[in-house]
Amino acid sequence: MLNKLSKSIYYLSNQNDKERPTLGLVCGDKYSLVIDGGNSVQHANDFLREIESLNVPPIKYLVITHAHWDHFLGMNEYNATIIVNSLTNEIINKWRGYSYDDRSLEEYKNSKKMDSLCVDIIKNEIPDRESFQLNASDIIFEESLKLDLGNKVCILERIRSTHTDDSTVAYIPDEKTIFLGDSVYCTTTNSLFHFKQSKLLPMIEDIQKYDAVHFLLGHESICDLDEMNSYWNELVSASKAADSTSLESALESFEADHKRKPNEDELFFLKAFVNDQILKSQL
Image (cartoon, rainbow, N blue to C red; front, side, top):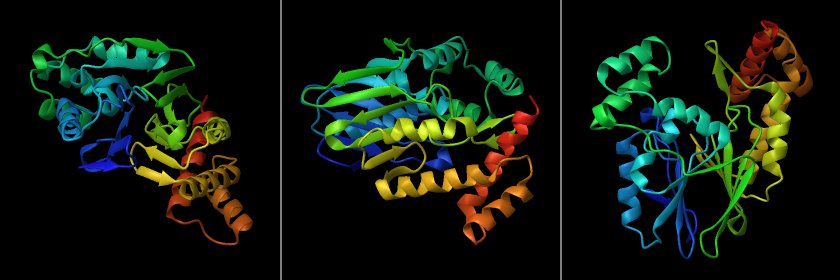
């Protein structure tokens, strides 16, 4: 079921059990914009069926927030102008060269080009895989792009991110709403989950310059300003405490500063920043 944020903004909530991220819909007087294409043909079509029940302008644009498979494998279904930043396009181009038959998928899984969950979802939720190929991008931008949907402006911008180097956000000024994709999350390198510590403060700066009160995230759906500020504070305090490859040292520093033990989220963040220190020490 679609969630209605305002008369012009809707979103389909994330389903983490199916690796389905939040999908967004922004409607102007003339056109509509979809934010992220979904993780499969089935995911996209589930979203489109929900949109069909609304009296909204036709979908003209689809923006992909970053080139992780769960955000773009459904993009062909919208019959829309596909918008990506240049780095996102480079990465998705590799997927455009893939074959999606069983044998090829097993090869990609074994070579770690795709993880097992991705392969399972492709097999179950993308029909006609023998002929499946991702459509080409139509608009490729570098830093930012402004769309006018008809009395509804949407600003797309590539930002610095702890998650990927190709993160795009979508900001709707008159609604004070921003779609963040997965930009504020950690990532995984060499089987270690970690936050890119060097990108944390630049990312927060890039996002906080927008006057937003509604934040749509890839795998939490929606947060308000207080929730986002709390998230930033927890990340920053964990980052300050994790200045070495020792989790024990990070915990001691955190407890000395806060006079308490970290909560569950803070402990996860501390581990993630320590892992980043470990990865940097291996370079």
